[in-house]
Amino acid sequence: MTGTAVTYGHHVPGLIAPPGVYRPQADTLLLADALAKEPLGRHDEVLEIGTGTGALALDAAARGAAVTAVDVAWRAVLAARLNAWRRRLRLRVLHGDFAARTAGARFDLVLANPPYVPTPDASPPRGAARAWDAGADGRAVIDRVCAAAADVLRPGGVLLMVHSKLCGPERTLALLTALGLRAQVTARAEVAWGPVLRSRRVWLEGQGLAEKGAEREELVVVRARRL
Image (tube, rainbow, N blue to C red; front, top):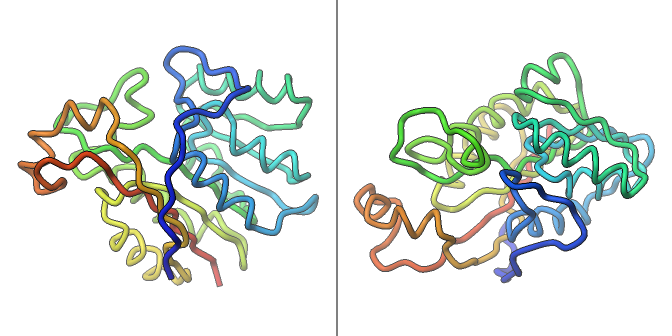
């Protein structure tokens, strides 16, 4: 099943986003739309992987869910905590790797907007680049989320993950299906290339990850339900 292609703006107003913290953009908004379609209430526990400003975690908390948000960047953790305080919403925000910080925990809904931009740099990303750089194929974190999904979800629980078509949604679906989840692409959005992709045009074309002269990319939301 595939959704209808839509186009979004670039920023969500009203959230504090210090320098170095990923600002809500088209991928955040696409995932927010998917979140809005999920039944969610006071008895549900939600995990957001890579929370950034906390935008999506706060959406879930506003609906009454108990929300845990994780980010590897201290600035993001502090930003999410501050945004939760300003909105008077309860949000548990943890610093560190999502797998380590949630070991043994189970959730009804997992949200993920992981880094997914392919990069020619083999060294670990630093600073703000940790929010988007994800290895040569853009899947360094996507594959980890897929591998953890079955363990972190309760039976009947749902994973919602957004990433670029550059990273291969078919591989994401295959990995999740192999782990026993029912996975499908439920939404798509077409957006203009940002400065990071434009700066890597020659490399992306050389790797066969982008067509020559491409100016836009497709984002997808993958929904996977643990049976």
